[in-house]
Length: 274
Image (cartoon, rainbow, N blue to C red):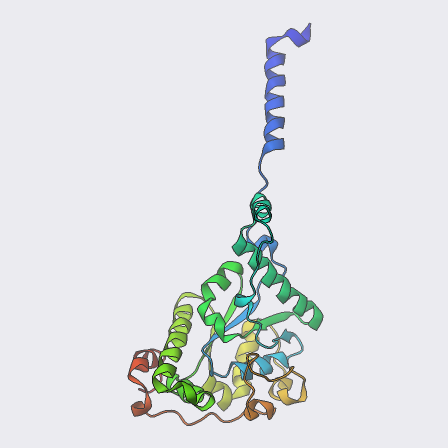
């Protein structure tokens, strides 16, 4: 009979082995680009006291851009209720890090959908410490590097928190600006200077719109006519300047003598007078 033919038996065996391999083959591991609801969110990388709230409200006024208050995604953590929960996620090829990325992505997507806009921007200054992870979570993410003269940043911080003292403030700001510089030296993106943003907001907003792929609208310059949520501590700047609804003239550029020694190198690198 044909079933006893050795060639037929060998063929049948190959078919069974192939079917077994198909059944038992592990599912493919999906990368970020296959699993993100928001493929290319925008992150502002800046120090504190660098004008990021002003940048936020200008962007948020655009009909296609949602730039909410600081979202602090990096502090949004995930925990397992039981040890076997972690094992269950591992069997799905989901480690703790990726689960947090999915959570962050879902938050951004929800806010984007709720706003009915096309682009979402997170301007949390703490992103300066987490730019590597943000890039890991969103390989197609976009970055805006907001610079301000480091000595002006120190002066602004001293106005806000004089109780911290000059030495502490300089160390604190140095950590921020060095992280911003590391991100700017590594990632592609658009560099914006606070001094230019306040001196010629229209020109800088046009640059920002071109980078984000949206059409410029003069409405952006009248940010005070739109509700941007509360201006309060930990959510962004809460000063009278930002509440005025108008772009304010920046403080005078510090003289070289006013630049603290620990900030001189980064000041020169950023091409500010020092």
